[in-house]
Image (tube, rainbow, N blue to C red; front, side):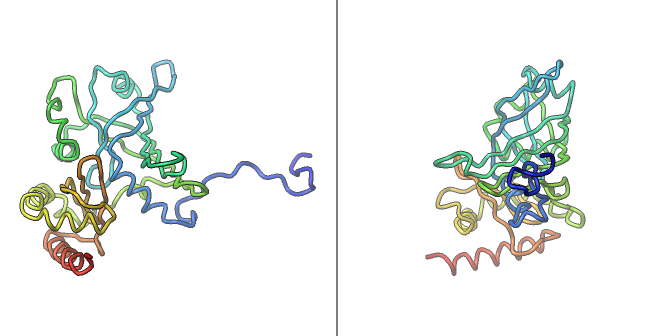
Length: 258
């Protein structure tokens, strides 16, 4: 019966996830949202004998969405990465009810140590309590250079993503990346009301929202254990354009607020 089933029809192999462009839903948008909003997940590394080893880590992202981690060299997963950088990270949104009904993303690639000041700043802004141990001699920052993503958006929603689909193209927006630190500090110090409006408009609910990062396409906010990704109505390429967009977004949010 090779090639056919018992009913005479053509035998089909197991269904495989479609490429993001053919998935029938916004796989790229959902994957990037998970990258920006999930702050802890499972890190899978390889032991020296090839045995898979999985552990829980906290995560942030660089301006382009590259996953970032702060790891202790005393941990087994860090020793594994220093010997074999291939690994994967699971970003799971979680929620009530069946855990398999909620979206999750696995990113595979290679993790490499990083001493980039922006990596440090972005991670610690996302996880301020990590400042207590970030400078311990055994701790160091790592970035995961992704090669692919595997998205499950819930039942009957699956897709594979390329590196370019996971990450933002920062070309032409170097000014936004360079000015991010000052803009984040300014918004948190002087515009808490606007941040609350942005978060509410993105479904984050009420709370004392803090800006943890921004990029040419959106900004990332947290309030306690909650996180939300706010996208701009259009991509910005410099700080002047960013200011105009943020002012317009705040004005529109005030009009739309109940």
